[in-house]
Length: 80
Length: 369
Image (cartoon, rainbow over all chains, first blue to last red; front, top):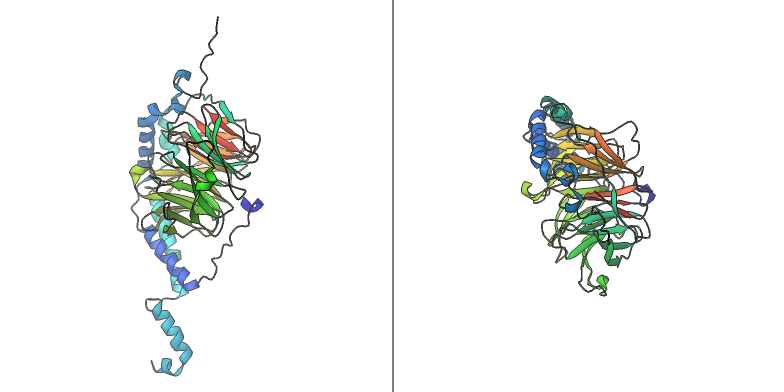
């Protein structure tokens, strides 16, 4: 995507030591493998609950009247 | 040992191995095998918990109604593509940056320009408002992130007070203040992210792990602690511990560059926009992708994403000049917004959620509500 403006960094790290790199990969994967996970059903329920609890505070979701939204135009005044 | 003593080159190799603290018998091959087995184990663990899809759980909630969102303000003034923007915490000011080298601060209510700075480089790809509202940070092809205090005196030359904070070895793609004006987090085409002290310019922590340009970062909402997420040209989204520099989680399901990452408001998930024409949602506690926002008719890359305040809506700007609004839970599109006359490069919801702003390669910014 960015080739139009700059050349991307080479994907090979300059001067990488294969052994050191392999060790880092393994250490990184050990960290990632060790985290605690929850089921998608529970995670989904929590996301839904958050949306539900906060829906009323979400002006773009509920739509607030023009009088309360500084960006929406108020009805123009007619000077008689 | 006798062998080693009679063969000097072996001593060197042996000492080298010893210095690297290797376990007995550890070689590139054994490490590679362990690496593969850990990856398989990760996939297995993640799959065990994949009991249902988010959109299935969301079937029981009401669908959203029709959305009417229109352009309420158009901010004209940049001479070239708008690349980035950020809202001030006062909910009305905006900073934007452009390929023309200019950084402009606007009052979005009135569309007046309040400040303008000319950078020494073109392609100012990143800009951010300081939490206090008293400064802005920006950078791009100059490989730096600089902070400009905003003066109340409109005639004052802002460039005179400029402070260079971050130095990368390739372009600056994104920057963000942390919870105060004192620290800035940056991402770069050099493949790293970094945390800097604004006052001294000192590097506080660097974050290595991406294997190509990092294009975007987002800080976790303050309640969730010291982490941030980054995404880049290696198609990965990484979550980092800011204090230790450790990459704690990594997600690789996109098929092309990740252009933008944004946290879900609760901090439990984040969304991405990618050149593969999809946006995706990753849940941090389930440790996996939980939704894909895509349509066969959407074939251009998504450049930028942001959530509405409740997290129910995802606004995404695309390279086909449109903004698509997605129902985050059900995975469906609820609106498509036309107006820009070139790629949408940036989309940000205002701090109080009353509007969102889009910036485009058509040189303008639009406020939608």
